[in-house]
Length: 323
Image (cartoon, rainbow, N blue to C red; front, side, top):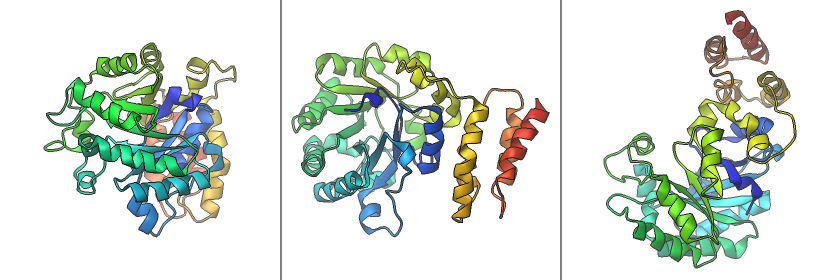
């Protein structure tokens, strides 16, 4: 169990890639960062390197999607060999694509299978194997349903559950609607912690500030923040001081940009495109005078062929001029 899982950034498809994680790490050294969900099929059969990350990202956890114990064990082993600090099994994603592959939230209805998956991974790695779930699915949303899931999965030694405090509707709602429409029931997750004091219980869903984070930490062991940490990334800048009691100075937004420049430079030299990285930085100045000019300048110029580092420095100038 990482001390860092007191505060983490959720795995978010298309968002929490290695460039975002490098960017986030500049603002917080302690936050546990998750990869996007990667399916076992992509890792085992895919053409690309789905396990690539930057050394600077630690502590970093790989989130896997899958339901075949053998495949999950194979991927967990690869992840541990590559140096990941944790492997997390996705039992929370509600998308149709995910259900067809028999992973994600629909697995909550098959706790024995989840236990087999977790057990198979634990057999081959020394790093923590953790689970991220919902509080329920469809009509199966009683507290008994949730605790049965936790009973069965914790019986094989899983110590660490992050629970999104909404149920998932597997039919009729899109993944986006599933993040917004089902009611948030934080009390349900608090109850799990009271009933399972020996487990590490994290909470996720709708958390948008460090004040809220501190409130939740009175009742659970960890808080996972999702969209807010992406759309308003500078929320991460005070996590080390406010949540982990660190004394290192808070990095300014300008320092964040400055520290990103060498990383961007390297990416461009390797043939990468500027907007692969700058798309994650759009929200850095959110709420400040001139932030619209920053956003607009990056959005309009970073995707152009041959766009270089000057686009970022020009965006800063545009912002200062727009104040």
